[in-house]
Length: 380
Image 1: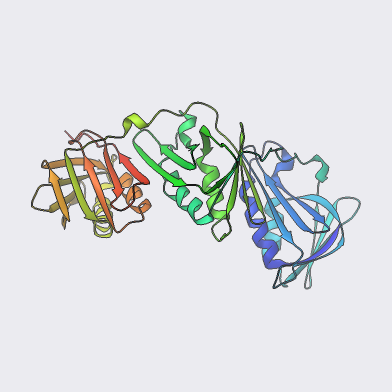
Image 2: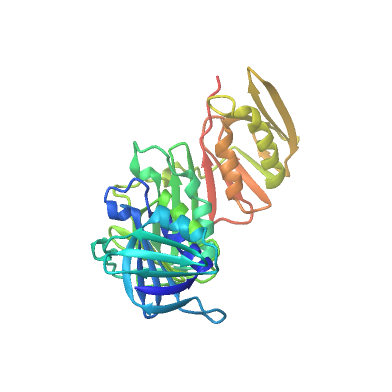
């Protein structure tokens, strides 16, 4: 194998696939990046037990020529050293050649490195996925779905299914739900293009996989094709194939947790409320339970307060746009509220309460496609 490649393009591609590579790989070869030089370009692959990423670099596009292939071939190189070497090379181009003993020579400017490689034939094959069950979603919409739900997954492995986001698809509507049993995030989006009669439920995508996917499609503008199978989900973006193993088990039925009525409804501007919560959380996070208290009544004044026995107390008042229903005093986890507010992309929100000890809902006032639910904390 021998080729010359643009260093920046090569570095970007390596950074994509290395997201799937674990430093504690159970199978030694999975600590490496598989590199294949073919007639149409370079294919890079990284994998672990949960995620596999294949990244393609074409020979050229409309504006630039990236690669010159002198000899096709393949090799697996240790990911950590190889990525650091390429990133720090001095020249704008890199020449890589591999001899019969699987030793790769990397040349850039006057720098030359030799790395021992492994046979690509021993690298595990990517999952063989039948792509007949698919839908397409705009990259920006997919990024928003991830941003607005994945933060609410559980970080505890005691209930593994809660470490993922539950996806359901029916009648051209994709619904995503995440919960750690103390809060819940729900978002749904209309899908315009999908395979005929596509329908699925209880597809649990690991939160870790979605976080890595969001980084890879950060600058994507083309639609992403999503293929769902019994054990895997595949995301096909421009020059990227992202495979994730699905979590096994039954996701809890969460629809019954979402209140359908309220005793108090407050409409408030998102930004002032968020900023006041950020200030209150400065003291709240010093406590083990990270508690902030919210009080309000029909005078349209909301009081936000937090208290730390060792440090002190903060009390701040903000204005509500509307206030309907009973007088309210409720305590909750400040981090949960901040995460929910940052996920809501709306200038104004409505918060529906059912007393001080029942879950409450946050929603954009102009968008019914998402909601955040938070459980209150008993402080007495």
